[in-house]
Length: 133
Image 1 (tube, one colour):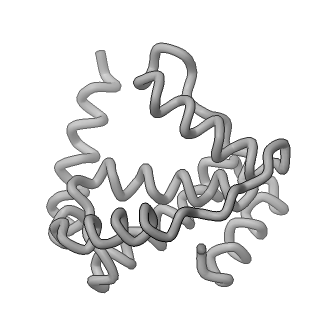
Image 2 (cartoon, rainbow, N blue to C red):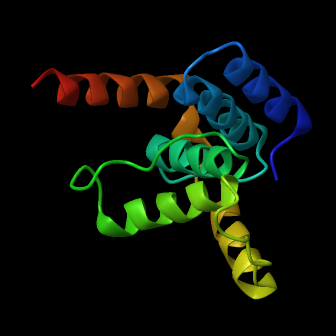
C-alpha cells in the first residue's frame, strides 16, 4: 500500500495538469526510498521502477500499459491488470497470504545497493544509450 503522502503528491501532480508518468514518478521515488531504508531489496533498478509503476497504476494513476511489442507479453498483461484495477474496471482480489509472504521474503533477500546513486546513474545512461538509436 502506498503512503498517504505519495498519494497526495501524485494527485496534486495530476490536478495541476502534469503527465501521468510524472505522477507515477512519485511512486517510483517512494519505492527507491523503501529499498534504501532497508524495508526490502531489488535485483535491479528496473525492478524497483516496475514495482513503483505497478503501485501507481493500482492507485489510479492513468498510466497506460506499454505498447504491444515494447515489452514481454507477460509484463504488458500484468500492467493492463494493474491499470484496470486502478481505473476500477476490474475488482482487486484479496492477495493470497502465502504468495504475498513468499514474495516479500524473497524481496527482503535481494540487494539494497541496486538503487544506489551509482546504480541509478548507470541505469539512466544505459537507457539513454538505448533510446538514441
